[in-house]
Image (cartoon, rainbow, N blue to C red; front, side, top):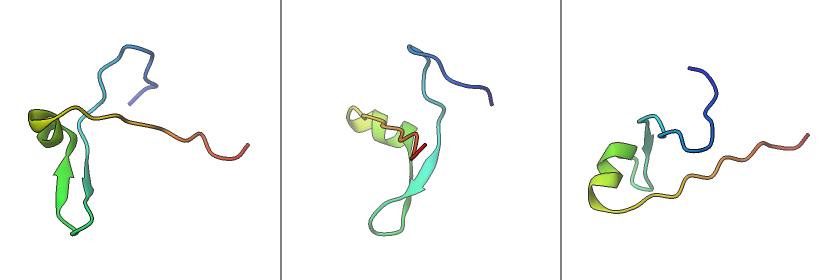
Length: 43
């Protein structure tokens, strides 16, 4: 996958929640909005 640009749609992905259940971005967006933050790390 290439780099995302401003305005691109986020790709669907899944991560475990606090209970260990995998939740996908598409599942979250069905119920509410989501804010994604990406840390570039320490340079």
